[in-house]
Length: 479
Image (tube, rainbow, N blue to C red):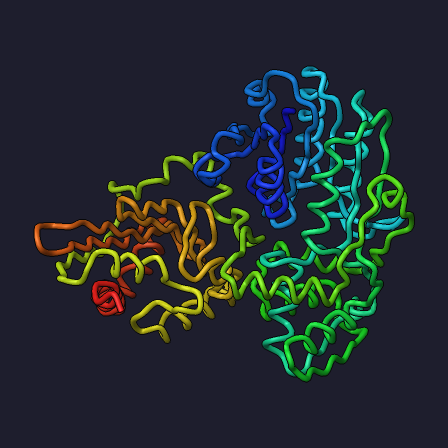
């Protein structure tokens, strides 16, 4: 059976691909860039990766052959484009038309619980995408879920930020809205098992866990599980804009995501029908169990995917693939080359553990200040951290960097800056064995934008000398 997953490198899509492959399906993973999708060796022969831009109709012609089930998991919640409603509508139309040409047997769409009159543009957009798919000739299964809880999910990480950082929260009134959270494992159960079900006509299923809670209750429960005492005071005076700023400065979210989240949280997100129980009987984990399960995964260093891996600045670049190497022309650089007797593997261990809770090894206080400044100017700051403390994959977030190339076998690591800078910045390493020594070649590359960009680089030149020299030395020690 051939199963297509559009949005295969997203939080849900990446996990679903492996679930389906392990069951023996031939999975067609549809992504915008192959470099951001890493196929594990154990399912390499079961997953076919296709590069496609759903906003370019001709690009969809790369999909060929019979498709038994197509998942539409494309999402633009954190995208910067102001016209994301129109973009989502356009991509859904192109996708539906191509699936009809291929005579696909059914489409499965994962949307959100929005109620009868969704208040946010984001939820209206998700509903519109569902309508577009339902208007086609192919039967559609439209799963609508509340917030999804799991290691690496946006909802889980945002609540963790709030609970673990703030003993007292002055919260907006949306904390009184009701929600029916569901664990990522339960979402995947429904998606995985609907593949074998015969679908003759389109249907909408609401999916959610057994608990109906307010967001305030969810935060208190989270705090209890973490053994923390917290106080939450909700006030009616915070406008959506102020609420967005509150989320932005307190949590690891970017401003675009914060704005859309606040509007989405304004209404209740509760299941109004439970038809899915007749089709796929399943006992979902309760809210507390989903939180405990998420922390178990984190402690085991088994966070498979994260919402933070959604592209931010890199996603807006028209040709992502050309950034696999830092440019050389028209750039300013700081080059550090060192030779060490430290075993190569120890150096690679140190390099691949950089950032997040491990810090940046030298003058960490300066990196933290840069992160706070970045946050003040609307950047992502350092709060995104990293998915795993020891592993790096192409395309994932690393503090205010994006991993462009992670090739440990060849000792190459390339990061692209998503911080606010008047230009574009890269940080790269090449680790090579030279006779009885190991060479580290570290390059900080900056392509300035106008006079302001050059002033920025040269004003920080004295600081860069110490930071980059010290960073290279610390990595070389390998301890």
